Length: 359
View 1 (spheres, helix red, strand yellow):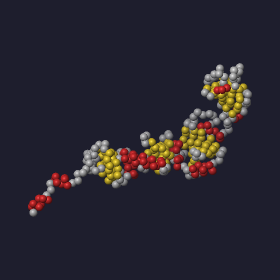
View 2 (cartoon, rainbow, N blue to C red):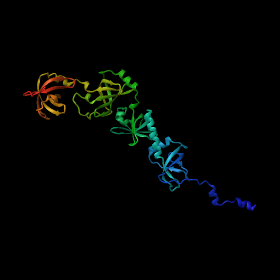
View 3 (cartoon, rainbow, N blue to C red):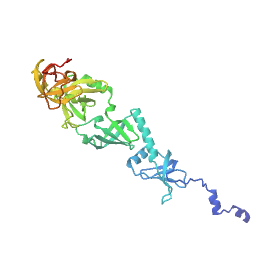
View 4 (cartoon, rainbow, N blue to C red):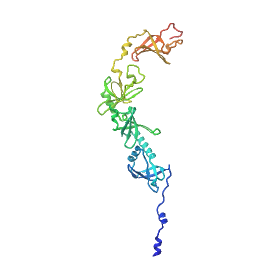
């Protein structure tokens, strides 16, 4: 009996041998597969096959939010080992790399399939809005892609529907758009409700070097994009858009066309007023002798100022080889054409003597 009992007796060494010791010893920087065993806002644990479960360390709130909304207990993940063993005996790991892969895969799908998502407006900037989604995706909504209210600042804290129109993984750049969601139906509705020559009020959504983008309310729930080219801002020739135009500002415009390809309405500010140059140009006639000042010398010819905003142009092939012009010099010329559309006169220089082979 005693010998039978003794045969069953076990030592600590025997107990240690009977326990499964097939554990891994994680190394710093190692990439390991694991399974989520706990997922809360205060603690995320992953079984990576070590003696104890590993603890996920993540201080970035956006990434943490993405993990909490995108994962569940039992999901297989890939972790990066930050510390093989903490003071409490747990390996410390990161899911940042795993999350990045999942986020970019999701963004790629959102862009390709043109899926709408809800995003919160976190902040306004000079160029647009900073947005974030409930699963931790942060991006930028440019003014040119936003549907504005008269108070853009009032959008902060609100949730809007957007779509992903551009992603750049290398630069970690995500661009959202509200306008990309607008269907062709909205544009067709605008075409039916607006007429050429009609005056209407529109809201500036973006000011670009070449023109002004606006938003036209076709109805309470339908909006369509409008565009004012720089040449339609003023009867004066502008090099840049005046800084008096601000996004969110309401302005009066005239409808001058419909761009079916871009699905937007072409607008004009200057056509709300009479062209001041029409009457001025009537004072010029073909064969009339004039005197002007050279304002620009180009490879194609010379631009001459005649005062009161009227310009003349002398083509290069009308300038004799022996004659040269420089900015600020005085020019005597003859009017050969009055171009009302370009608000410009075509000129030829007055010659004291006709050079050989001159046309």
